[in-house]
Image (cartoon, rainbow, N blue to C red; front, side, top):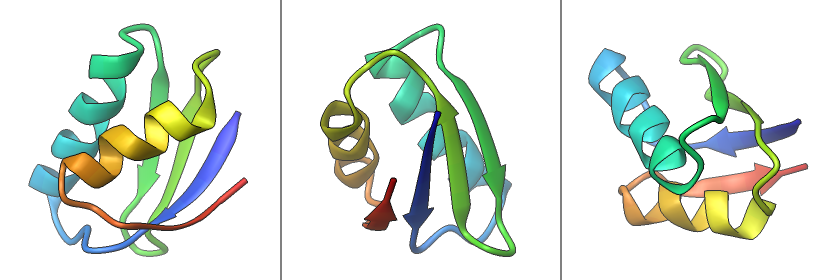
Length: 66
């Protein structure tokens, strides 16, 4: 389980775009997003750098990850 701080998310379109970006790397990934806190939780066996890169490439900067 990874927890990321993802900037520039403000609406359901953003939620969909981030979810789609993660699931393009790992189709089985579970993604939970809290827009208010800009927190993204990802349950995936894929390495964190690949998931982070996909989110950044979709246009959403990742400011912290654990």
